[in-house]
Image 1 (cartoon, rainbow, N blue to C red):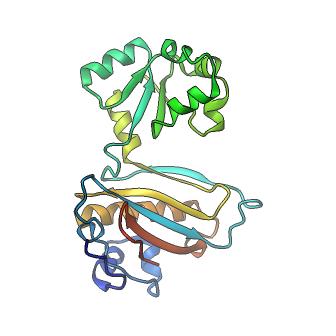
Image 2 (spheres, rainbow, N blue to C red; image 1 turned 90 degrees about the vertical axis):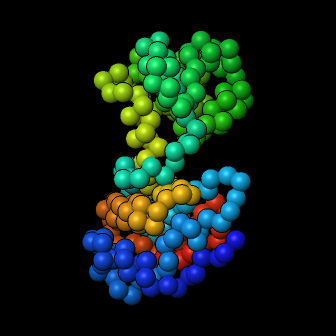
Amino acid sequence: MAAAPTTHEGAWRALEESGGGVLTRHESAARATVSCALLCGARKFKQTIELQIGLKDYDPQKDKRFVGSVRLPNCPRPTLKICIIADEKHKDEIAKAKCDVEVVSLDDLKKYNKDKKQIKSWAKKYSMLLASDTVLKKVPVVCGPILNRIGMFPQVVAHNEPIANKVDDYRSSVKWQLKKVTCLNAAVGAEGFTDEELKQNIMMSINFLISLLKKGWHNMKSVHIKSTMSKSVKLL
């Protein structure tokens, strides 16, 4: 696999010239080739491309923690494994739309009898859980508090929007959240992206994160990008 070069001016300058807001104000930022073809070598699976961000002048114990999501123009996680705890109406809609999600009912979850290990093992098979608005309040009654504790409590989905659109929104979104450490990461691309598609997602992801930071760009310590199997490439 060819290694991605770490200091090439062209693509990063293209990012700046594309009107990337705060990025254009920092000419001293390190530059790198942002190329999907270079990041992703030949593998037997489709690799994900990830942004890795280091923050500075942030104390997670004292500073207000932030969280926010933004939908990217190009879907970075088309195969994100999602399970929905569905009511009958959503079950029918998913079957008709041939939506690529797994479906369970509250009755399916009752068989675990609130056993923490079994519920945790089931939930960890997925990257995200969703639940129909009509059954969401019953999930803690059936499963107990374990889903909250492991950070897997379902996101609600209503019937006023096609479920396929909602699933696509989740797979196309990037979420930035400050927890206990000042290192953040998020999927922004996938193998097969054009350089332009990857650039658009990187620009939107970084600029959205900067909008959440207390001092904006001044809180950015480092920015790296890597694919599943590549070494990281430094952008800043």
